Structure formats: C-alpha cells, structure tokens
Length: 113
Length: 131
Image 1 (cartoon, chains in turn cyan, orange):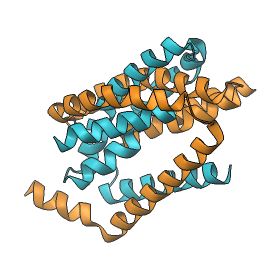
Image 2 (cartoon, chains in turn red, yellow):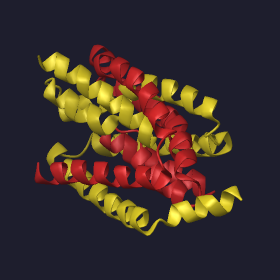
Image 3 (tube, chains in turn yellow, brown):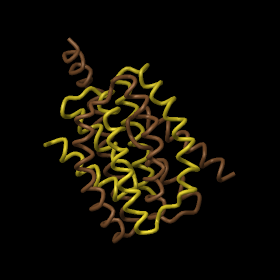
C-alpha cells in the first residue's frame, strides 16, 4: 500500500512538472529498504507507466510536440544504455552521492531562475 | 546549433536516466525550453520523450535482474491517478512559481540523499540484505 501511495504522489509530481517522478520514487524505495540499484531500476520501469499516461493526458490538451520529443528522446534512449552499464560498475554509496549532487545542482539553478 | 545542443542534452539525459533510475525529464524540460517551447509544451513533450528512454533502460535493467516488477505495477497504478491530478493542476498554474517550488523540493531531496550517502546507511542495509 505504501508503494501505491508513492506511485500516486510521484505521478502527481510527474504530471505537474513533466518529469517521470524518479526523484520521488528512488529515495522513497530506498527509504523503504530497497538497495539503490534495485530502487533505480524499479523506478525506471514504473516511470514508463507515468510518462505514457502523462503524455496521453497532455495530448488531450494539445501540448505535446512529437518531433521535439523524438529529437531529445532518441539520443536519450541511446544514452540510457551507457547509463545502465555504467551503473553496474559504481558503488551504491557513490551512486547516491552523485544523485544528491545532480539534484542539488538542478534545484539551485531552478530556484535562482 | 541549438538542435545539436538539444541532442547532446538528450543523450546526457539518457545517461542520467539509466544511471539514476529517473526518466530524464529534469534535463528534457530545460532542453525543450531552449528549443523555444513554452513551459506547458516542454513538460508535455518531456513526458513523451521519457517513454523511449525508459523502454530501453528497463530492458537493460531487466537483463541485470534489478527490477522488482510487483513494485512497478503498484507504483504504476498509483501514478495513473496521480499524473492526471498533477496535469490538471499544472494547466492552472503559472510556470514561474511552479519552477521555483520544484527547485526547492529538489534541493531538499538532494540534502536528504547527500546526508544518507555521507552516513553510508544504505550500504550497511545492502550488506545485511545480501548476507
């Protein structure tokens, strides 16, 4: 039940900000006791459901630009292969610290504007 | 030039997605804004761009045996309801204030994660789980 609620909150957050909700799901699953690598992998699969549902929602509002989605999405799909391979070689603690740095950098940038 | 930069940002988003288990929307949204899309269009397009990334990433992660599918379906079930609520709210909010709120939340999560990484709590949990 806690996992469904995490999905609900992550979905809300994802729909609101146009992201998958992984920044919610990964720490929440880790907090529930999952290993970081398992949390990251499980989050990635769950995000597929969130993003597909969100894209369909916004298609209804006419906001989706399909060609632009392909322009960034296709290179990203290639990048994801390298990212997952790289992840297998990293210590979980290093992975977590990198995640924290990533979030802090983007967060500060967004707040400053 | 702008398109080339968007492609590079897209590839970087994919690496981060695979590495951290996020969709890459964090980088997609600024990349799409840079290409001239409005805030709502960028968010909507970002969600669509996430789909191919997670398809590839999930396929790789499934191969590594890291995915817990029961949790995936539970998360997905909750997110179906959540994403509609979030989308409806986004369609009613000003982009600027939303973005600052989003940034503050990310900093909060970053501090939480950084603290735990520094403490090394998850590695202890993993070691005990493995044994």
